[in-house]
Image (cartoon, rainbow, N blue to C red; front, top):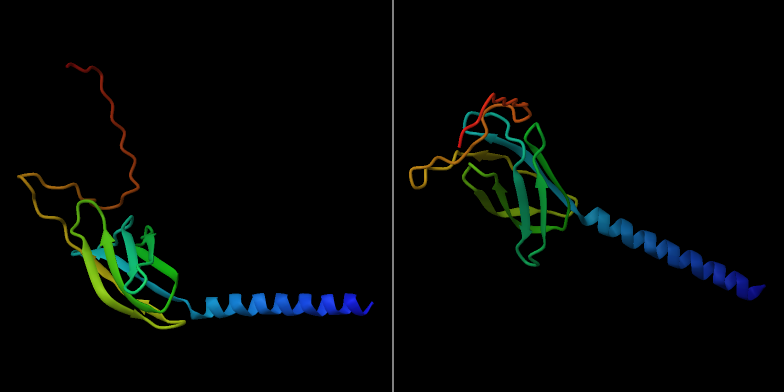
Length: 142
């Protein structure tokens, strides 16, 4: 009987310790979020935003939604380098973005259309990206 009580108490202590460690680690994390637009102030979906922590090198990525919003949650406190990448646009990088414990930092990106290379202009989205294009051909020649 006494052995069973000791085991029960020990079990409760272990469970309580596990929950407190989980809560402590969650309470320390922070979030970096923002909106991505182009130079004309149009919202840009589909942009990959990557945060890299300076000390550890840990990285986390998110993709901007249809409203151009991205959200990088669960980041440890520290200094980050953030990069926004989308084909057809110049890559934008911010360094030294500070995030405090339980903090929230807002960082908005403005993307510029990439310059011509070798006489070719990279494809860039124009307007809404969820259009359906129907292509029909009666005949084809090679």
